[in-house]
Length: 461
Image 1: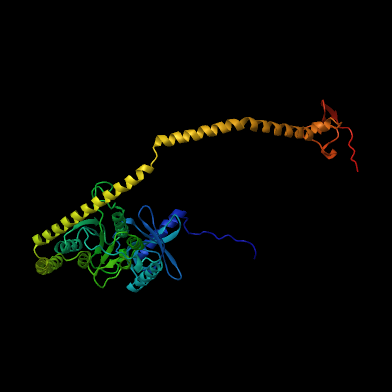
Image 2: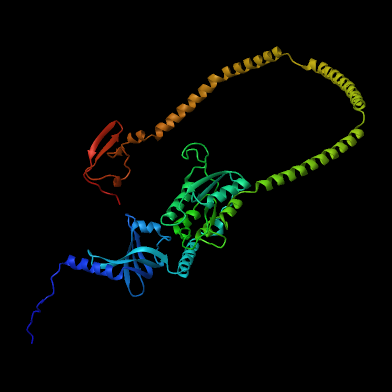
């Protein structure tokens, strides 16, 4: 039959959406309790509240997970995108969206192999960026005056470093206390490295408030499991180490432990104690070296003085008596003085004789002036005689040129009946081509000027 027959509800009780959702929530929590789930982290997000929201997935399904802020701070690892983990917690639901989720109480890497694979992929990616290149490595200072240490303020690491520095080469140590594992450790360590680099180079009071800028940094912590050392594999710390302008020694874990900051640091130490030894020279060795050098220098100086003394004595014997040498020099000086005096007397006598021969030929200046005055008067008389004649000749030439100019002037042409025509611009018109109909032209005759209007223009073929 095609007729629709409604189904009767019978004894099924009626529930609201909220009642059903919370009933399912209780059923999930009571049925499953604590569970352990393995999967890959995806869409990892730490909310501003500090809580972690993420997905745990495998090839066929996805599970929403939540890790509250307090639990996240106690984890021995930092949850990251793509990491394979095992989560322990409780299954519950979120009624507002009708989906089930897991509240994580504990999180651990799903086997060391998966974690190492993720770290190797990260190492290759950062190496491709050049963060581990040997060309970026900085040389450690030979005699550092100030060393900065980034580590936990408690524990054996800082004590071992201070004790070893005090034995080898006492210097000023600045400790930047940080957490070395757990949530937030990577942020504190990166901030410490960047903070040391932000200090001014000057040692005077100012922006540093009297704190000296370290010449060398040691980033250190004791040994531990791979999970304990995970914060030193964080990309944020690796970049802070690679970008540091202050040389850095990485001293994380024991000799067999390797973290990514070991590749970015300028030097890797197998232990924190070894880092203190790399950072400073051995004071006792330096003192012994100086003592040996001092003995050698004293021995060399003593031999040199003896040798030079013998040579001085030998040269002194070859010089002879200074008084005798001085007497010879005085005698030679006297002889030279006598010869010079004789030469000067002869030169003076010769010069006097030359002057006596030349004196009669000299003319007195007053006589030269009189002769010059006489010549000047003679020239003046000649000029006075020539001036009237020259003026008359120039007047005749001027009259001749005036007549020629009058003959060549256009005014003489006007006197023969010709006229001079100018256009409105005052330009001389020599052809009808320069005129236009209606233009006012000026005509100049021999005794005056007049104006006329051009009414017709005819060209002569």
